[in-house]
Length: 291
Image 1 (cartoon, one colour):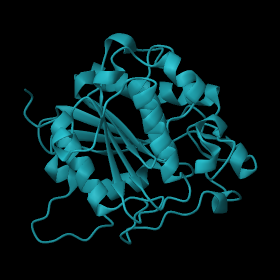
Image 2 (cartoon, helix red, strand yellow; image 1 turned 180 degrees about the vertical axis):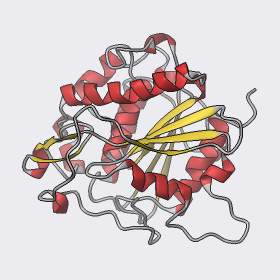
Image 3 (cartoon, helix red, strand yellow; image 1 turned 90 degrees about the vertical axis):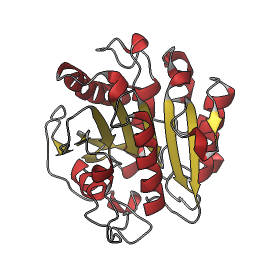
């Protein structure tokens, strides 16, 4: 997992263009999992970024890369009732990386995603996005069938995975075709260093309940892969065009709308403060004791 605190450096996506990755069937969905240590009443499904794997984020959320003070709890220890699922993206060619095959949730036509491009100039592939939304939705439905309602499930992700989480969490039945998405609402969405994809289609495919979904959005001001300004533009569009509320006060964490948090000097990475803020958000939207 990437980190600005020396957890493990995030490798530039462009630098990995010519790397090779083990082949997997396009619809194979191996997942790293953190099992709950208390009665299971909630689930978080978290999608990694381009070229990564679920195991990296399992280790990061587990605290494997971090140093903690005596008595300081890991995120799973703070949320013992939560099951974490970290799926692996399918292998597919990525246009921005010269067509190289790698773990990717959807095709990207350009990297980095710079502020000068604005949202109109960021191009993602609709078909592969639909396919990956269905992968996440299949995982959601598996949790529902096992007894965890959608109201106790959060979808989240980093970078490309954050864009996927936003699409899945706020999208209606045109994206989540296998579920009753227009009548079902997730507990929340977490977007780390992500953006709003498919601008021209997003507005028409949003779920009726999207305004009432709590969203945690964290982004580093020094991000040179998904530029900070692009995140700001994404939030501005969601607020201005779709009527979603934006909160800045910490006392609004977990309220319907977007809680947008900036992390000074953080690049395309995560940090301890962001992880603490994520845990606080999750404690709010999927608390241990159901109310």
